Image (cartoon, rainbow, N blue to C red; front, side, top):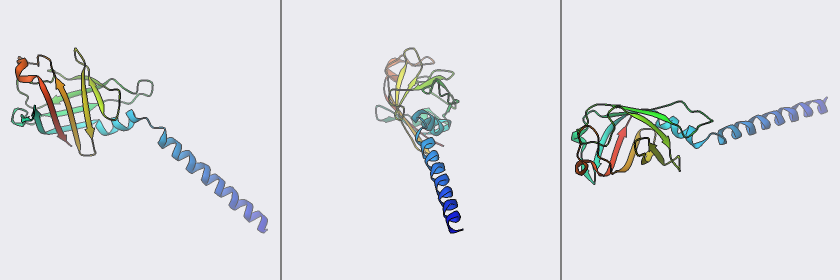
Length: 159
């Protein structure tokens, strides 16, 4: 009888071990893009805006950026969608209607906004904050002037 209980205990330990090993493998196999998309996909409210270290927050009243998309294993880098709402000045580095973006070369740090030409964006994201940093060299949108839009932009958003 004792031998039978010992075998049953051994079988239970083996099954639990295999189950736990399987769980660890599934977590480890999640792609960086999938994890980062889950963090990024949200509506973000601007809390700070600078152009060449000068505050431009007053020009972006109630500005909200929405990042969205459904992860696809066959195209993990994207494209995904973005849109925005709220006030933007006529001299701004954002297209009039939103567009698409993808993960860049380092998915945990880089995004690419699909414009003509594409715009590389560095980002940092946490559960409550998103920081986008980019150098804009284009003409700007909605009647902007190059001298008022070109430069190093930093947008800080909160949930």
